[in-house]
Each structure stands twice: as structure tokens, then as C-alpha cells.
Length: 151
Image (cartoon, rainbow, N blue to C red; front, side):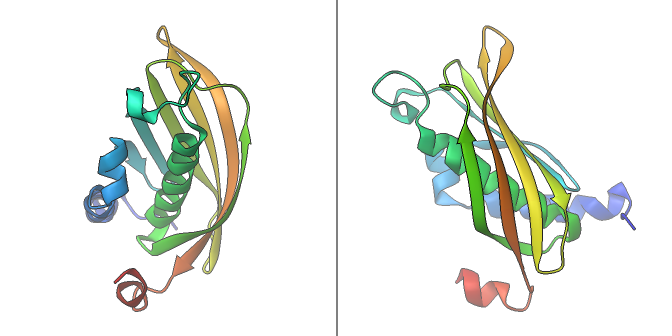
């Protein structure tokens, strides 16, 4: 049974706060642009330091967005701490344009492992181009263990 939106608000606020404390998130300049139960959208604007030698977004930026967005999406289901266990990333096309957007959605929530899919798009002249897709296994962590794991 899904909880009402009012019950999700404190979960979303907690997740957003935690995510923005991640040094790498701020270093890359990524932002949470949408967060609902079972989904997360992260995006990042084009900057020279995020590009590889040919002027495309570096594959590591795409991988980071997928890693973080899939974990965040899994955490939104019950507000439970989560860590990436594994993901399979397919790079479909070079990521150019002005912005990268990663949309993650929980495919199968689980008590111990959740399965989450993600797609990455780049924005070129206002249009989206699909550049990557991924499937992730996200380990759900007992809240009592989370402070021990995180610290």
C-alpha cells in the first residue's frame, strides 16, 4: 500500500538533504530535479570539466548519474537507506548538448534488494536524445545499520 503524498514529504525532504550533502554531487554540479515515490530525476548542465577530449559528456558523468539516481529512487519507496550493489550500463550514443538528465524508476521494490531502471538523455537544441540505459540492483539497508555503514 502506498502512503499518501503528505506522508512522502518528510521522506523526500530527508533524501534531498542527504543527497545534497554528498561532496561529489556538488562537485559535479548535479541536482535533484524531481523526486516522487519510486522515481528520481537527476540532471547536470554542460561544463568543460565534465567533458572528455571529444567534447562529449564523460561516460563517468553518465555512470554517476545512474548510480545515484537508481539508489535514490529505491530509497524513496519506504524512506529506507540504500546502496548500489550492481548496475549494467549501456551507452547508446555520445552525450553532447547542454544538459544530461537521468530518470530512474523502481521496477521491483524489495525488502533486501530493489531493481531499478534508468535512462539518460542529453538535451540538444531543446530536444531529448537517449544516450544511455541501465538496470541496477540496489541493496536496501536496515535503518539501524545505516549510521554504522555511512560513518
